[in-house]
Image (cartoon, rainbow, N blue to C red):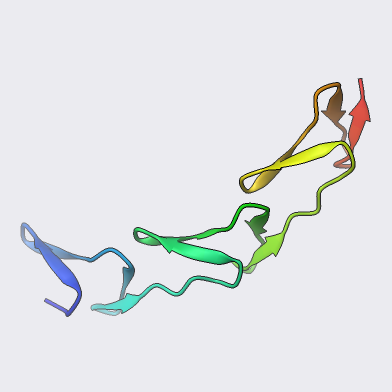
Length: 88
């Protein structure tokens, strides 16, 4: 059993903050603008994963509010096809 692992029946799992990699438990590394939570990495509020796994700042249109890792249109507005918030 590798270092930073816990025995689970006939197998083992990596401890919190570590991930399996070729039979070992290696530390999770938070991306810029992100953090480690349990056995995964997450983006800070106002940031979201891009296609490379990086945490990028959300582009928030006018009349919208950031909520955690996404944005929603303010009351009286609705999201349009071009990712804008249009008045209802």
